[in-house]
Length: 448
Picture 1 (cartoon, rainbow, N blue to C red):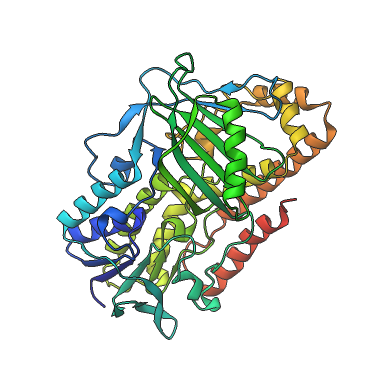
Picture 2: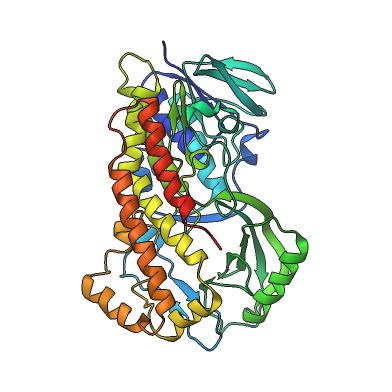
């Protein structure tokens, strides 16, 4: 083999892997459909773990660290007060405009020697037997020793792989969101309104989530649904936001597009001979929050480590399995656990949320997970046995909810057992059987 690496798509995780490989002497080329660097990235900002760049082995940007921004969670009953997160003084997180993040990543990978070909749409993989050896693109066919798939949620590489490779090709309903995000001007004359990050648990019986983030100059709106929606729904939601946020202006400052985002557990199988999926192509977003930046950057380092350890340069499913194992050990297992919690939340009705908010079952501490907590263990670390017992006592009058909480607890236990039994080494038969058990457990958890 050799050291000619193809990165299909300029995703965050793919660029991270590209950086480490190029610095180690590999020939790395990124093929990206955007016409130019300035077209990369959505027109919005993201909060993510301040530790991310260090853990991904990347140079830190010069700016971006800010004090953690607390979120206020609002239930369906306007008479119930919101639950506000609380953080210790001095805690920080990254807050970056997507285009600024991309500018930083493109600069560091270019300095490392990575070549980026813009205006190149990837169509499909090229296979010889069961090995991926290149990509078909709008600029012609390109071959390499390894193809890293960073093409996104509907990757044309993953969706065109042969079924026998065992990599899930398409996502199901409730495994992705259509998200509208836009920044509107903040009206003057509302000086008494505090800057606030409002997340609404339910909205008028619609499946999805929404938020309104008030800053010094803008109001950042998010409308996310599991079904496609158009301007009528955006206009309807704008009126609802306006009623609760009278300082919301009508001037669109930034954003305003609808984007498809994966929102589920990571793919069961990430690798094949000559192929590795990363980022949105592998469903690496946090299943409740929907952000995948931190996970993807970290995964890029894990993938590069696995490739660099392949001293025979085979880049086979067998040697790339080290990446799969490391990802699930450090990230994927927790994301799968959080997805079980997400599916429980999706099955909650308006009355369930009213019960939680109205009976003081959820506290500020319960919801004070943040961007620096990237695992289920960190997010739920304060749930000691005594805390759980106290909450169960409060829920005790709602037998239906108790039963459903019991079911999800059992399923999380089963999930932990399944992920602990992921094959130590790759064989197509063993991995296929394991993946079937993993996916079957989520399929049994129906969204109603």
